[in-house]
Length: 133
Image (cartoon, rainbow, N blue to C red; front, side, top):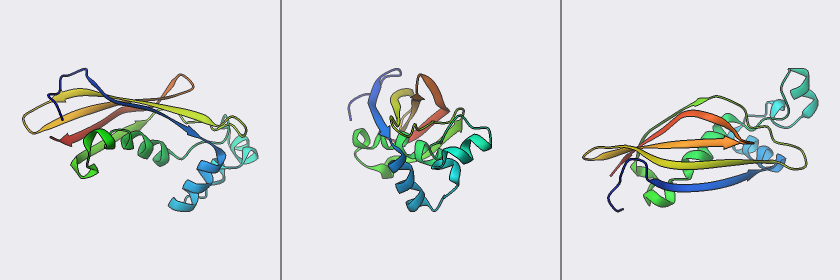
């Protein structure tokens, strides 16, 4: 890993989610809340549509930096605020875009700031990862 400078973009990617992605995640996580796969239930509780699991969004966001890090064990701390849901359309799905930027650097660690958006809207706020250098 070369010298880091605040503002450097260290990783970027777009992840396409489908309803199948949500069903697979539900099976892996055990979270079978119907707002994650049934339009009628989502509408009944006032949601704009079927939503991706928050933890799925959080996990795919941080995974963006793992190839750059080379070792997920170098992640020391990770936190986000859930600001907006990712609505996953039945036919078109949804794209989640992640950009990882160096936010701060000290002698033995760095803070990586994640910008996470879907449909032009920030879906995770204050998404920060502290990594061991």
